[in-house]
Length: 497
Ligand code: BGC
Image 1 (tube, rainbow, N blue to C red):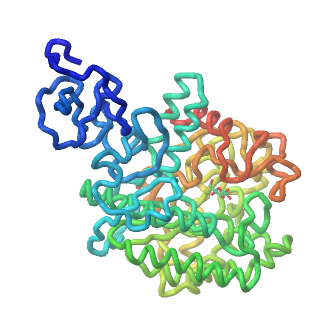
Image 2 (image 1 turned 30 degrees about the vertical axis):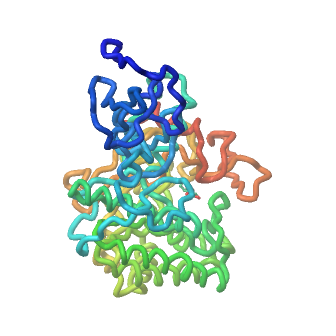
Image 3 (image 1 turned 30 degrees about the horizontal axis):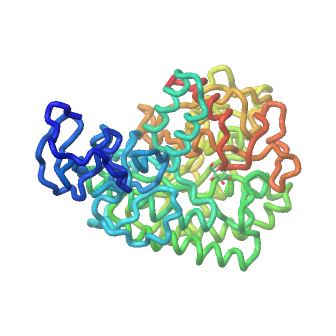
């Protein structure tokens, strides 16, 4: 600090103040109030005098004096150092719990529920009802999931290559979906992120779209093991699905009505109803709950004007064959009617899969096992026609491009678990392909870096596909962070990061 203006009668020993303050590292305590009289200002900050000694006047937000904004929406502590607690917003560090920071002046409504996983705990003002019209992805800022940002930061901390770190940093600029994969996670994530997105919407005056994945049907993942869920295929668990899961989602969404929301509904479930009822007893056990569960949630959530729903349709190498598409037309039109008057906007394809958007090397023949839809583009073109012929009124699609930029090493396109050769695909965007007006968006539904399933053969949810020759190993449980897979996805990104 300013040797030129030394105070004469200073008590030389600056006692250690308890709260961290920008002037402390310079050897001066922090003034007791941000409203202290400013005696002097320099590049370090504003100085006051207390007890005959210089003191640093705390800025409105402690991190501002270090060149970082104060967190406005998040209270998710990503990193702590001597300066204080750090969060991340819009891909940049921000200071938490500054004098006026942390929650932008709002009073926490439910501090007891803060499990330190990020998000806005205050009560942002809810505006007038928002109603989707046209493409639900168009015209909004896409919400950045603070939890994913924190995962990426933790991943960067493990990297040594600076070019890889730079690529990883870019991941924080792109939106991906928030998976409500258990009742507990739904309770932790839904409200918190709705509030955070709304606060950002209020602050910026621009609509902020949040995408959630509804993923907790009884008997989940009936044809595989890696993502088996908490609810079993029985009536009492179905009651829990309705009352503790869907009804709670409905309640929060009904309240937070002034912001756009998209729901990707129950990945893999209906595709299993198309192809795996005959050969898989667990899918037969789940059938009633998958069908009734969809009817229940479409009636409830499909009635909300600011919520657009996409039912999962597997991917090109699942339902792409002619006979599967034909059956799919029947199954999906029946499901949509069963949820009436609730509405479905369209269908989500390639969720958590690796099928490329376009693969000009393939055409119907022995190599594709006579599948006429050997890439996502041809699949959606065909499904568009199939669903229209089946009488479905609203036929629009989104395609998950989080991991389909680079052809993976799988020897068969049915391999779905932690594939080697993975690469990020097209960035999330509305109306990404001209001439394909029924393609609402490319979006990252599966967060790159989260595992598809454990490779530990002794684990309860071990699935053989996660032990295949082309699956990366050792891999953690589905949904857990998988550094190697993430790094490979960054390296193989197409377009490059
Ligand atoms: C897992 C979920 C997880 C999701 C996103 C799924 O495969 O089963 O638990 O939330 O992936 O990573």
